[in-house]
Image 1 (cartoon, chains in turn orange, green):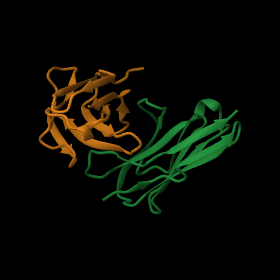
Image 2: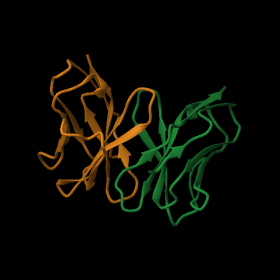
Image 3: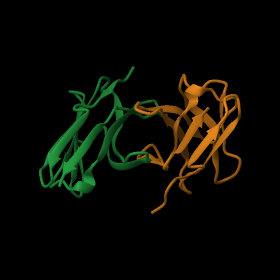
Amino acid sequence: EPEVTQTPSHQVTQMGQEVILRCVPISNHLYFYWYRQILGQKVEFLVSFYNNEISEKSEIFDDQFSVERPDGSNFTLKIRSTKLEDSAMYFCASSGSRGTIYFGEGSWLTVV
Amino acid sequence: KQEVTQIPAALSVPEGENLVLNCSFTDSAIYNLQWFRQDPGKGLTSLLLIQSSQREQTSGRLNASLDKSSGRSTLYIAASQPGDSATYLCAVILFGNEKLTFGTGTRLTIIP
């Protein structure tokens, strides 16, 4: 069964460093998303991406964050200058239409 | 602002029992509702999607219902098994939005 894949599975970074989280969405999907889950809290929406542009973003997704689809298969989330409060599990997701959204296994980010 | 609530936060039942998980949402103008399963430290596995025009969906031992007018959905699990132990999350998308709004989840433990 097709799946969303994410790398790395776990990254530890120092505060102030840039981090890039990578995702390969399901191949024929058109909508791409990033969500995050701080330990013990709800899953929160960050951003959605369609037709090579951001279609919706949350208040969390400030100027420190950016997304890119550099080629036909990858979808990345960049955090420019990480803060302690960015420590969370980051989930990439995709959907073929505005139907079922499929999530990856997540990337644990620990900022120290 | 859409709020999604799941009660109870945790539930333990003996193996073989049927059980119901509850989800409520404040804004009934939903486009669809999705139920997910999350194992500890893992990603989100989509279980069922209910479109706003539907009343229920079934997959194997799982049945999800939707009552938009009362702002509620239930996930019914028949003949529970230890492998069903996980956190179950519901999430909704409003018309005109891209984002899923998640509940806090119900942590289910099936006792062998």
